[in-house]
Image 1: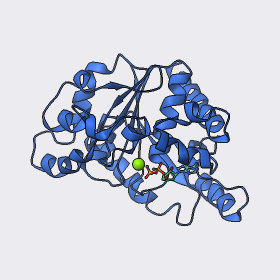
Image 2 (image 1 turned 60 degrees about the horizontal axis):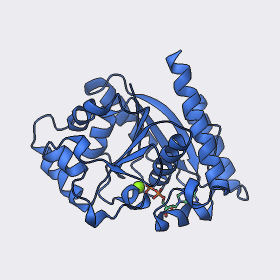
Image 3 (image 1 turned 135 degrees about the vertical axis):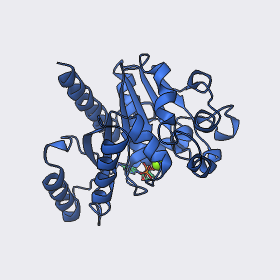
Length: 258
Ligand code: ADP
Ligand code: MG
């Protein structure tokens, strides 16, 4: 059975997509079978993995709205062992269309059932909101992984996110748990970054990953080449850190099985 991890934070620009793309690529690079779902209408995960958003046949939209079979939607990526469920701007309408539909929060969960035995990890890149797309992800997930940017107001909005997790646990998915918090865009030269790390550790305690992702220009360049960092610049600091993060994620999931 795969472990389903939703990469979520309702703030935009904190590193969700960068983390989803690169963590899933690194897990695949280490030999795990991985599926990444792009559930953000912006489709940055889709284009970041070199898939032309305009040329995709079916997308996550068809899964959520037209009950398409997930196996008809998945596409290959430049990374061996990594499959993608793509998204494009069509998904922007889904949130509204879902409001009046039956089982609107559990559609993704049901859609994933047929492939849950095919992968070791399924990662979901969530949009920057707490709307129905994110609720579908949290309902389908075993775990939530929260990227936090080492910037001003880093902790702002996190109590709201944790409230949402509690509500999902109560009403939709009692097994949902926090997988971990990953600090992103860390700049060792600034006191601010160091302070944010301390604050986040105070708040989330042992849920914070040892690996901290530094600000690394190669990480921000890679998506424009449609490549994850591990293929774009495997020797970069960014690649090294996402490989370390993948090790931690594998380590924790093995501990859970024991
Ligand atoms: P989100 O998905 O949360 O909106 P992104 O992953 O798209 O956030 O990141 C926002 C921007 O910051 C993007 O332009 C991305 O390339 C850049 N970025 C993310 N992580 C890093 C990093 N560690 N170093 C440098 N730039 C980064
Ligand atoms: Mg994103």
